[in-house]
Length: 273
Image 1 (cartoon, helix red, strand yellow):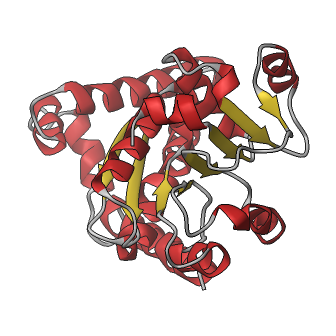
Image 2: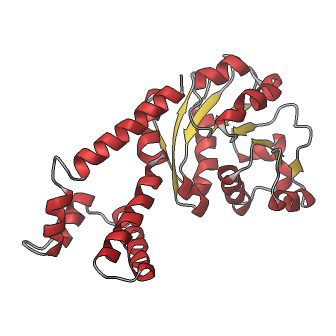
């Protein structure tokens, strides 16, 4: 299955909120034509209404055999939205879900066990093309299905394949929820700067740029994050003094993040039941 299949048979986007819109924008920027896309969303944005004037099919009857259906509805809307696509199950259509907390088995129960289904966990930096998405497929999803899903999701960032869906709760806890941890780090770093006498706007600007720049450096550098930390830490210097606090095994980042990520993973498992 390739992009040519999408051009010929169509792509259906079920739900087009922030994540769906980010992906759709990426696809259109990479050459997908609006007339190849069907969007079903109960509250379409002005942007979607504009695209409808350019050929996108908005809340229209979907094709009989689309190449792919991407499910991006909120979990609480799933029970109402998914059964409307039941007639496409057990066929050639690939279902790709980016909905949080919904297991592959749920889709198989609704759509049929012979349906090719891939579950994906993107994160919010997809909105600026810097997301990372983990994928896992069911027994009916082939290598070509996975490659098509990766090609679509790489429009908004990187992709990784999981060994199996059993890893999805941990992925959710690390990269799915992870941006919120980083945003909170920015908040608290800026507040700490204020406590040392910096104006609020200056401290926030320093915190944002520092976290953003360090993240980019960590991605681009050949050195590991551990080596990058060592590189910037002069013996008995200011960074070493701070790291003595942050790396404390009982009160620092190691224990705190272990507990935070475990809490998120446990909650993801609960929500999936």
